[in-house]
Figure 1 (cartoon, one colour):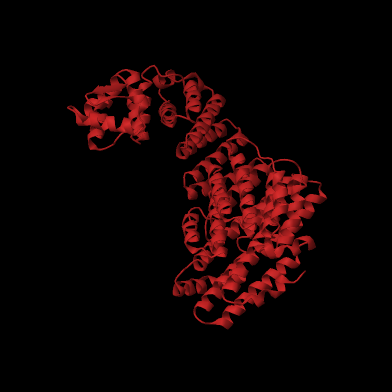
Figure 2 (cartoon, rainbow, N blue to C red):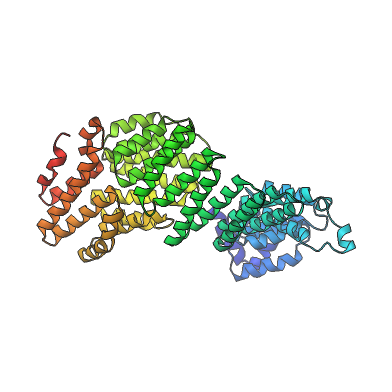
Length: 578
């Protein structure tokens, strides 16, 4: 490809410059000169300096046939100007433009692979749809579909879906709202609700949180008007999701209240859906009080099992496993993972098996984790769900490699997991995988590698992971003064809100700091606190796992710091047989 770019540069340096080259590419699809020849098809990019800008702008006026406008659109696309490309494609449709329905079909077909063409078709469609139609001559020129309210609403829905596929949430929001208004006008209130809900989601994707929240709040009133309990719960769930994105504690409290209200609305109508809202409420509650969230989950699990709702119980066990893992109480995490792994076959079961393997690996049972993973079957598809499940599997393999002290493999698996979650559209999970990779470096005493991962993890980090990121920043700090300052800043939050993994990292970092500053007694106290935490974790494990707990990453990290400071005797409680 570099040779093509070199030839393009050389051709632009010849007489006529960029204007001659751009003109030839638009008129003939190729340009030849003393430096050789290039065709439009082999170009991967074009320079977009002032000379090229003027050349392309001039060609907008000169390009006559539709094919020339398409070629000019391609040049604009290569130059990175999607708006100009869309304009050229719109002009290529000419006066004899296809019907509105055909434009939508074309936009739907183009959206996945040719975004500028899809956007051009949608913009041309919008121009036709939103013109005035109150004059006789305008009404006579209407496309037949515009005279049928139901067909018109369906066409707008198709256009909105195409805009979403083409990654244009702003256009999608306008089209969904217009479709909803058409449904409302013809009395189809449930269809109107469905479209307005999609509009709120599109506004959210466009970053217009306030507008999305305002629309979601109005949607609840609409649902109450036609007594749609399921729709009302959907609206409450959307309001909760939007409020939860706000870092304000009061907004989080309102989000939890909305999810609980949604669960109550559905309680006697759809117990499974009600439990799903309870699970979301517990997940949000965990941001401020994990213990309260776990209590709520215990009640929800009992209710699901009493109603025989195996799928709902499986999801709740999975969430409980994740929260107990965050607390570091591996015995309870294992119990919930095992129950979830016994649930119905499907994506949740794949996640449960991966969670079980992770918990086993954290307990130091690398061989058992390997056996569990050997039976894990993943779907082979390029879909968000498949990539998400692959990410779960890779996290488990990373934990297993870490338990076996295979450092390079563990790092590689965590990195692959982050990539998989990005492909799945889960940036917070990708950031958490990077954060876990940085935590490995902290346990292994490799600050440089950990800090590099920590920097990347900051992008897309979920609110509940920010404290862990602040702790790792302190634990990986090389300068003693900086480490002391950072540990003082995060210490109270870790000791009052954090689970065993965070308290352990804090104790190890504090022990290293005190040893560096000559406070041997303070270092010993910090290590003893870490030992007490790990003894508590071991006591909750089944006896076969408790015996091998000394091989866990946590114990090995503690041993590294103790041996470096000649304080191996503090490890005695962990060396004893349980």
